[in-house]
Image 1 (cartoon, helix red, strand yellow):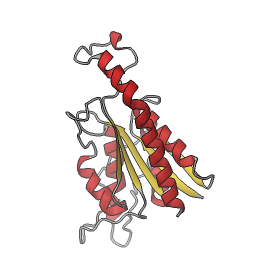
Image 2: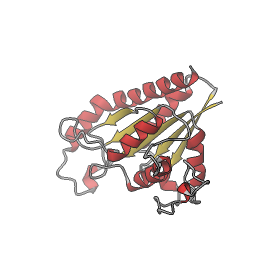
Image 3: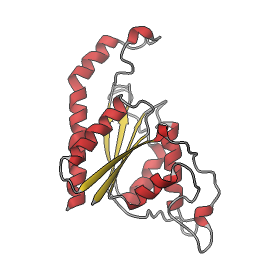
Image 4: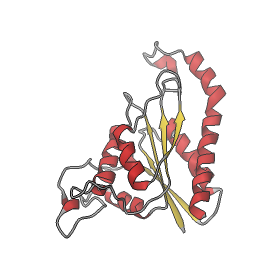
Length: 214
């Protein structure tokens, strides 16, 4: 049985990022019943970012999986043996959420050798980075994964990137101080693009599943 791990770094269970990742999961699962698709919601876990204990770099005990024990430990162990990885997050102030950043620290720091500065993951695999943001494609096409994308690419392989732009922020704009946004314009953009965004996520799920099964 092949395994794809989806890491949901968004705080809302049923909104933009979660919907994109659900569509990806549906696309992957549609390819074969020989693929297990598992989604992990980071906001449902109690964990920390890297605490610089350096347990992953002890002499004769070095590990490329984080050794600090908390709720994130089984997730990191799952990723180490997975056949595909999906990372999804909204962009907050141009970056992924704090929970996703903390996860990426714990995931990637053990890959880095301080002997020769090589970066080695337990296993190479296809990776997809999913980002949702309320900025427009023209004005705010920022890379929320930032400096972390380099280690991911070196250790796992060049990732595919999926964007959903100009996303709806809330269901009822009248309840919030959001006068800087036009709800009508956002609704129009969503009506024109959202289903296509979800379809792109489904297609990416199918592609990853097909790649894994080759």
